[in-house]
Figure 1: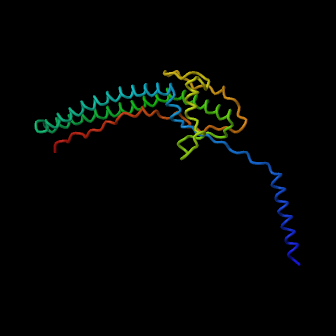
Figure 2 (figure 1 turned 90 degrees about the vertical axis):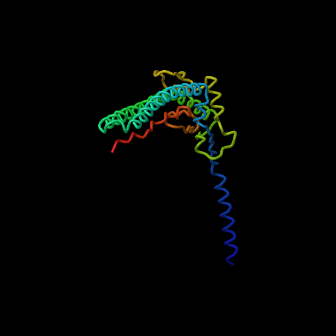
Length: 230
């Protein structure tokens, strides 16, 4: 006596569920692409030129530091050789003079690092801005909802990897805005050429220009001080 109403109720419930399911709109698929932002910036023609400029500046500064450190090393060896000849006071003065020179070199090292960082930002910021503009335009034109950095994902399907395309479009003059310059008057590329997104197109990229691989910091001077006479 109870089986039929229960069965009828189940059938009605199933029918209602199917009707509700048909009436709900299908969710739009989220489209995501990937760009290796670091490579996209540094492998453009402007990026390669920036790397060469930074490497030249780095090599020059490193040679200067190496030369001064070698001179300090010779002075240290000379002090050690005269340990038994110099008086305690004379020895102490030589050591203090050596330590002042060492501190001066370390200050120069810090200044060189600041100089390199400033030059790196100056050279790469306009490249970054223009690259970002290209990424946005591709995302908007092809309906990508999001573009994430390659370093944030473990795997990506080949057709969703846009890095080579971004580099090619950059080298063909894409991205709009002013051309990157190698002087301190460089200004970020304009983004006004990007079309408004019909969908929520967001390019996930670093907030500042990344470091150029060739622009490694000079080696910090590191020499042990001569030992004072007991």
